[in-house]
Length: 178
Image (tube, rainbow, N blue to C red):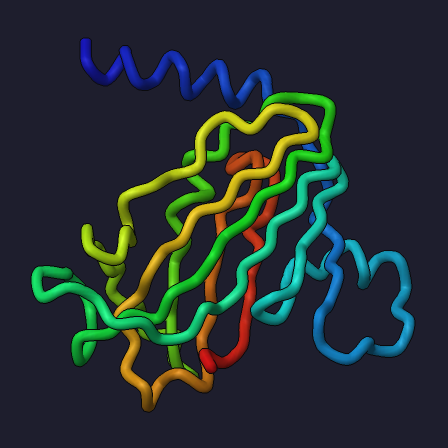
């Protein structure tokens, strides 16, 4: 019975979801040469600090706030510090956005994309907040932390679930923590 309780809303979401193509990207780094429309639509990545804009009008930005000290009881930290990021979602669409899943980005480091631990710390208020329903025209932001060694700070990848996890591709942000 419990499985049915979770399966019914999932099926309803699948049936209600509308298909949308991959997002377009606003880059913070130097502009690349003009690309064909097919290449532009397929690109769903940006540098840290850049913005990925979906066809629905939803914009996702992830920026690095550098390394910050955490409390002694923090979990997932490396050498008493966490790499801190700020995730901002702007709902430029005409529909409500249930953004909870977007609050749980996957952070990896290095050439092999080794998963970084999520940092939870009450003192630094990391890992405690999640995005909620974002109405059209509204913006919400959350900070999150990852346990990353300073030696791995040059090659970081943050993957954020798309606005509609069933039809939108994930937004991917790459860069260095400074």
